[in-house]
Length: 376
Ligand code: UD1
Image (cartoon, rainbow, N blue to C red; front, side, top):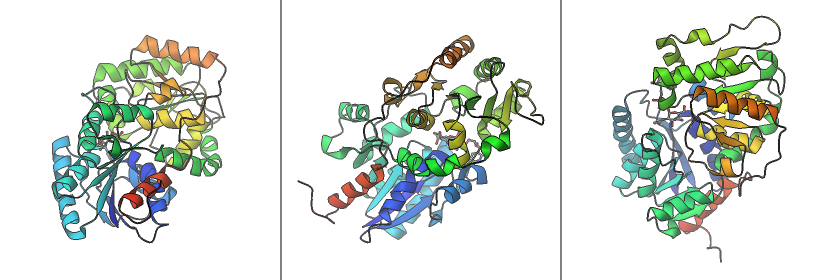
């Protein structure tokens, strides 16, 4: 059974790592890895391959950054050639980025079945590019692997046959649990001169938050007000850094001096997986618009304020540490201060977020392709 696995952007790398590792344990599987090149920087891509021991891609489509239509079209054109050459039995895509839908669509048009890992998540906000990518990928996938039960409900409501949907848990959490001890040894706190439990950690990259000057300014203004209470560390996505410069918002940031970081908001380059995991695990509070970080903080038991009006990952709110706070300045400050004043609570681990999701996925694929007897 030949599987072409696809990655494109940073959040895909931690999802594919455990799947490739599991596939390598089965001699009846031949797993190829295609990197579309949607993310291409050392900090956004190469570093993750090294840290997560992901094998070098068999092919890199090198599409780079472009408008959505150009990027999607380029991926499709180049991926089609790969499929015609390799003739795989299955294409596996993860997450919700442009590479996910581009490769899924290319595959089904050639009659090659698609497996979608992290299927069924819905924010119900069609202005998000990721929501469109999720809806379309799920509509054409043959195997839909879900991380939470609400995703199964969403897919059933959309008319996806139940036999295509498999609740398997969360591959990103497989990676987190595997690397947690190694991350604990990261020296990033010493390097940045902060101490455990004394700082807030921020990430921000959604177009709806960073591409619109008043919204980005309201968020930065709230964060810098909060930074009068505790240092705020902000490893910054390239998209966001560009906008901060373009909108003349650098004055919200503080220049680090020698010695322990004091109050203020500090801007950094994007961090690698292990350093970022360590920073998350030891933060007093995380503020983010990322989907994956909502899940990771839930497992780490760290309070997370989502700077969004909705989430496609409701289990992180109903059963985890996540609070949706929106992007209004006063609301962000009030909620953050409230959380900082509360003692931490123990949280249950969401169902099947146990480090074995990749194993379940590969088992199901092998069964369906007739390589091992069906389970009763
Ligand atoms: C993409 C995904 C988003 C995901 C995010 C994680 C889509 C529609 N969006 O958004 O779901 O959460 O990745 O980061 O697929 N850039 C670099 N170096 C890189 C890559 C990008 O500098 O290696 C810069 C470029 O200026 C580019 C911008 O970042 O124009 C945005 O990159 P892009 O891939 O278009 O989308 P993201 O905002 O990263």
